[in-house]
Image (cartoon, rainbow, N blue to C red):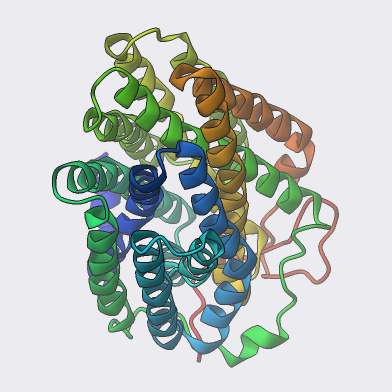
Length: 422
């Protein structure tokens, strides 16, 4: 298993950009739980914290595709630095306004800024992989590695944010997130050798037809449902742990969820997918749809632990599969935008799942939040089942983009996957 990942990481410059993107992505798992804990301390309500997180994720959803388009056209270095500066303004503004008891509309305004220009280091890392690798199975392994890295982030980030917020100061987790994001983003922006851009031709490339192409539409619907489950799981895990007198342990529960995901993702990616990449994605979605019901069955924390690990084991294969399918569906010059659309779908789902779970918990108690995650599992299954024909119909053409997409497909040749700008 290790050999395929060793081959990917020995590609020139890949280990360096993976490390930088890893540091820059840790705040993804810290900002949501850090914001909920910070605002819950100030207001006493998980629901209010969830709505502020929703504002941030909606801001990200509205701008992610535009930022992805800018990354494709102007290159990563310039865009990443500008995004970082804007994000820090939003983060500091949120910390100050909440601390000072300023009117709540200001909280939401700075949250929208904070999320709207969050530097997309994950999309940038995947775009660099796509530009560096020509072997389809090796690229699939690289995306599985990225999914595993995401889960390591969700192992370390929530624990760090929770411990800092509960043991140091309510806002310490958010401050640490800002520091890590600054270090990782600047380190990634400095690596010009693996930057796929700037690509002046990106402006002339047909943009991904995400709402008209059946395969892309199905893929995004699945990611929205997955996002709902993520938002519900984060808020519910924190509330469930606190209800049982284990406030800091809620971060450990989220880490166990991510550990199950990272482990399964690495094994999943080590197996060559070949032309069965779409079928494997749909199978992973089916497993996730079932597993999201498991935590609801746990009456206490000891029984919750193994169920959380099993549920998490279905996440990385689904996310890696989504990235592989998207990589095959869009032309190289618009690939960062394609990955950004996946992020749009994910955060749109989170923006619905987090406040819905928070409101449910406020009214019915912590355990009821798992019902929201279980409902998201139903949505994952329905979205995957409804889009099965379109996703399986997605094909990879031998000569690159084949003009207007046929129903269910945008043809992208193997040579397109590794094309660098002249």
